[in-house]
Length: 54
Image (cartoon, rainbow, N blue to C red; front, side):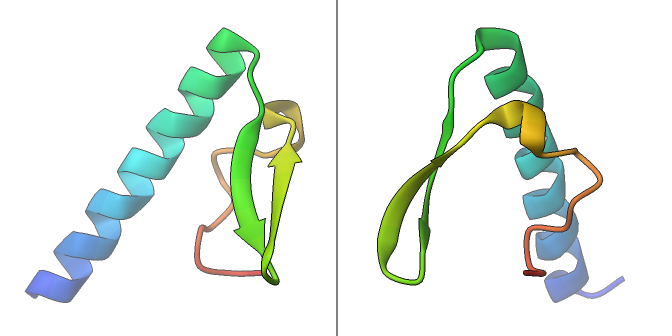
């Protein structure tokens, strides 16, 4: 496994932990999409979603 694969795997793990934390705290996830800041309910996101895909 090269460094870029390790970095991506680490980012995916961090993303999953963030979603689990947001579900636990019942707070929205704040993201930037197409230049706009939006709130996403954590219940609408699964930890199986890939961060890098639209």
